[in-house]
Length: 268
Length: 258
Image (cartoon, rainbow over all chains, first blue to last red; front, side):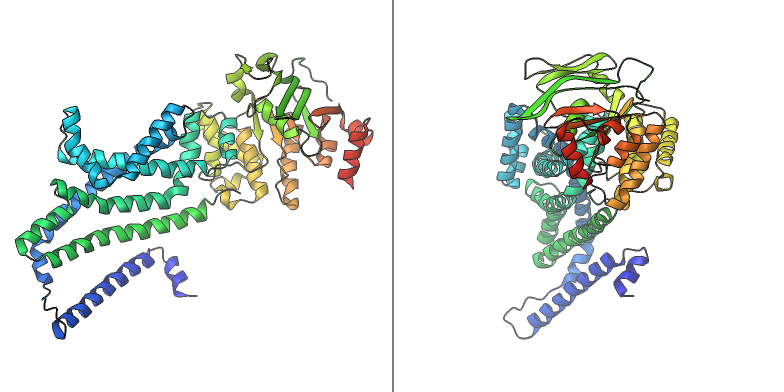
């Protein structure tokens, strides 16, 4: 019996944990090598000092909490919007389809930073409604994600065999019931990898809000960096924090995906 | 054996026609099914058997003719384009169901959930009734021990029996079987036909499209032979299968038996 199957049998997700540990160890080793090289015979005389990060770690983690909140709220709302967008995109009414397509293309074809600025600065000018900063960026990200999730869901929905839809119809389910009980659960599984990668992109893209003065992880990084005059150590730590959150999510989701494939292989 | 007590057919199809472009898929088909009857439709592929099923089920439109359920208008087309739906249309889901050639179980749901979906979300039966009914129908098709399994873990024959159970749970007047054994490995065909045979013997009203001549001979109350979208002849199985009147029926039977 090989190591892999023995580990899998234990029921504890050892493989992802080991992978994370290996990666962290690898990165640490890389830093040690770089520091060693920097200290000996190169023109770079920068003295790395990660000890300065310590006292400011709570401030950075405080920023991380806001980043995670922003990510979770935006993804939840974005998915709900995305399902609606997917259905509107497949509507039999031409006007609905055209407007939805236009919205999707605008959101996909413009930089997220500019979308944030639009909602934060331009929306109050046009509508007179001034949202608080957090709500404002959540709105911008929701609109952005709605387009991406919408297209993902649409491709998933269209990948479902016609017989599944007909079987739901024959059973007597209404259009909305077929969506809810038959189509969306299956489409969700088909597009899961895409949904995850969109979500992880968003997690990192939330760092854009630091430019609007929202105190997320990167914003806190800027503050601490200004206080300590140690931007390299601080921003490296910030990057590491993003990575440490995002990478295990990828691994966990990949396992979940395998689980789904084993249990719910498409009925052929 | 064919005659039923009540005179009003469960389904009556009159002059049903349908064309895909220039191809006439159904050519003024007349069929009626009495309560308790097992009507078996045979014929070469492309003869319109499946289309007949799907049209009666409301999955396809048609260009002429009329369909009635228990004597009430269900759908009609007189101008060659628009299908007018009778006031009975919404009752279709309570009047008939269908089992497909492809296994159309919902893969993300266990067998129990597959079977419970209709009774709970369409018929709005109480939870306890729904649960008991799921257990009863799955036991009836011999899958009591698979109630918590997912479709991906079943053989083709088991999936098809589960699909039949899902239909039985709806407890509708008519079940149509659209070539339900055609996608199965030969050794799995028997278990599915056995379930269908038991249903027929228990008095279910069935319309069965099949290539299984043994089933037609032993289970059918009436056999219809279709070719090129129209009914060539119909009658008791012994008559159609052993003494066909038409050359086309004879040619088909000789071809399929050889």
